[in-house]
Image (cartoon, rainbow, N blue to C red; front, side):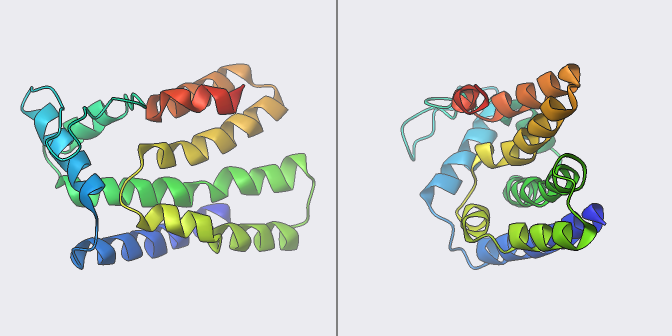
Length: 175
């Protein structure tokens, strides 16, 4: 059931973000991410002319290197938007498992929680406001909490490690 909700949310989030991209309503920050990916693929320093900063300045989003590799064969703009939409939608799966396993809630309550997660205004704002690599950390941080409660520490470390590749200062959130 949580995977169905995640798929449904991905279709909604992905459709909304691609519609916004198609309307040419994304701002200069999104263009900076696209230019940085292009620069990485050309083997150049990802110093964008839009922000006059590198892609990694301030947040050190290491995840952009593998994304840039994928962007060699897939158009970068839809890739970024769909990755973000997919990550935000995937957050419903660990949330469901937390509700059912750790909190011992019933199926009906877990469904309500999944629906509330999908209708969360901040989640929609994040999905529709350009691209933020730290949005990819949302499901990783939820999985990390789940793994910490189950005391599966190597899985916890993997989830936290992935979250830190999206933004280096998320270590403060984990602490």
